[in-house]
Image (cartoon, rainbow, N blue to C red):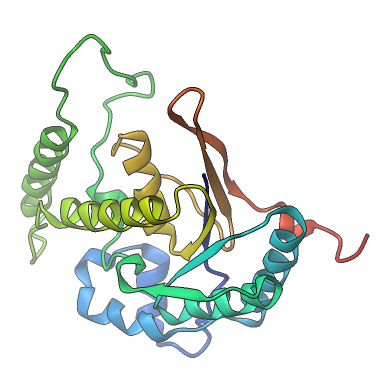
Amino acid sequence: MELILVRHGEVNISNISNSLKKILETKLLEKYEDTIKKLDNIGLSDSGKEQANLLGRWLQKNYKIDTLYSSKLRRAKETSKIVNEFLNLPIIFRDELREATFYLPDYLSGWSSPIQFGKDLKKKNFDMRTKIDTTLKEREIKIESLKVKKAINTQKYENFRKKIEKIIKEIISNNWEKTVLIITHGGAIGTMIRNIIGRHDMTIRMDFTGLSKFSWIKEYNRWQIDFINKTDHLSAPLSG
């Protein structure tokens, strides 16, 4: 099985309010959940449409896609429809693939230094969820001390993680021998990757129409990371 994850194209924010632009720029999404929902209906910019066009050409040339899934949010739907002009597949739209309404990196557990990584493979029953909950509780205390009006719900990321885990497992089980393309959002893709690798203490950058690919290697019974956030298609020649 091959699993290709793609972020939507660049969005058109030219007509949104300055307050929403500031939210996007500062990433303070967790404080504006009601407002950020207004972004659900923002479509692609002209640049985003061109990115989707280049992506579709590149995928057509390099892969035989069997199944196409997409988030229902407008920016992902528009990207999917442009890409599908080159693939000619039924698009399966799933609401579970929508983006989180909060800024995910603020909810991930962290390390105390750049050299703190890995885990003791001999240690049994390693519970990453406990570590996540503990870190989030510590973060909540710090935020309360800064007098932020709304305390962070420590289950927010865990609930989003579970939703993403459920849909990605469903997609995999229904397409075991196929090459699957999923067009969704940066936070959703990062959470899919974190679920697959079993770590929730890292941020994963996703550029507009950036591709990430995993292959299931039967000989070893494990996933192989082929690439993450690949954007070669944006500089690929249109012919030849």
